[in-house]
Amino acid sequence: MDDSDIGELRSFETELAMLLSEQDVTDLVETLEPGSSAAVLV
Image: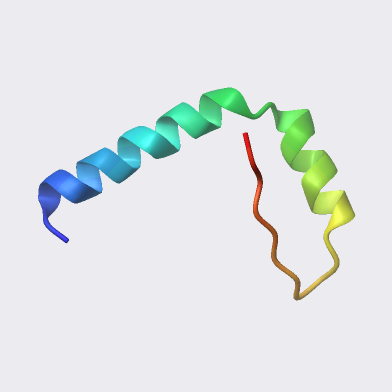
């Protein structure tokens, strides 16, 4: 993975942060049990 790949990933991260509200993240955290993981489809 080179610097251009990292920049592209950061761009996606920024776009995702703008799609999910703080309440969305709070709801997800409250739903997950400790030690578990999940994926979010947007």
